[in-house]
Image 1 (cartoon, rainbow, N blue to C red):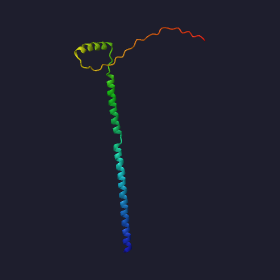
Image 2: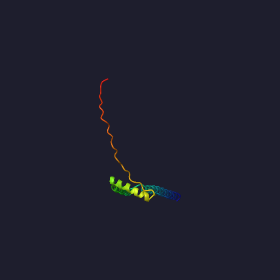
Image 3: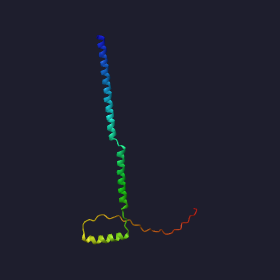
Image 4: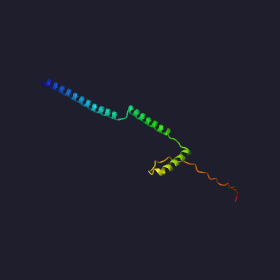
Length: 121
């Protein structure tokens, strides 16, 4: 009877140890899977990348629309602007908004034709 109780208690102890080891392994695996799941949620996935790409495309389209709306003015525009400035200068003394930059072509100076004679010294 004493031998059989020792065998039974040893079997129970082995079962408890196996159950405890299995439960510990399951808990460690759960923690590892949980940390992997959190890191996957925080990392950029395909959907977030696609949303960002669409946002970039919308911004690019808006820049293209603004670029296509730029209007270039000719000499008539500048004449009218200067005339309006002179008229408004006497009436309105507050600062005016900056005007577009005027780009003009300078008059080219021609160098006189010079004959250069090359001789041996």
